[in-house]
Image (cartoon, rainbow, N blue to C red):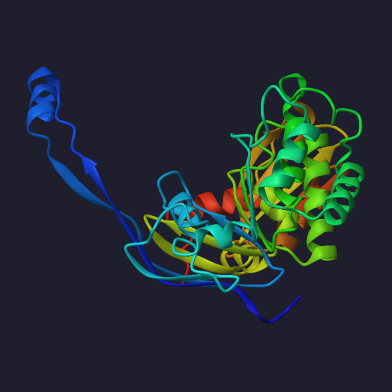
Length: 334
């Protein structure tokens, strides 16, 4: 990975003017003739840099400001203040030249024509981006193989499953060999097999082509399986910028033990732990505890010494649970 910064953001701010909504019929009538507005600061002094070839998860709850930030990064919105430089371009000022260097994948909005086949749409994209014949042929053959497009590339998009369409959309975003790709919910609504295929392709492409990638998603498995770095934004401000491992190791002391018993004990009472059923399995229990209050070894000993254990495993909470606790203020990031 290059040490050069592909993306540099400094003091980014964006405010929207939002109409106030009054209650009741009189209030609604008043809004029509005498509308009142308030200012909402969607992005508030956000700064970060991303190196060439990095894969970064950019996440936050709904209304946090992440989509607004990504729209400014992609040149769709103009910031009120602050500076953005991506691949040497200022996105909102050099949009025509800039878009030739980026790819965007929207999980909920396809860039493929509904009535055309993916192959026909790719031909249109080839002319829009003026992709040289040799590069177009090489990329098309490569992505067709890696994404498994061969079985449906000539079928109308309306006949494709969601997973097939998503894979075709990813190929469309990459045909012109962009330096940066923005992924917005790339696996939403797709089955487990389809998600794994997309994530595997993304990781492979990052390694082979050194493409800088930014993910905005609510599926934390997308982040965990593709990214090493996480940027968390909430209420327009950056909460965290660092590695996923630091989020887990530095801020989380919760541990989960899943135990399968030869015969479920009548009473399973271990101090300073919480015990719950495990997915309806009558022989399994989930034991949750905080390592600041009781050591993992003590919990294991209490289980092993007094009960007949068939199988046992120790887990950390998923990253989605960690992020939820950060949003709720249960984990304070210093």
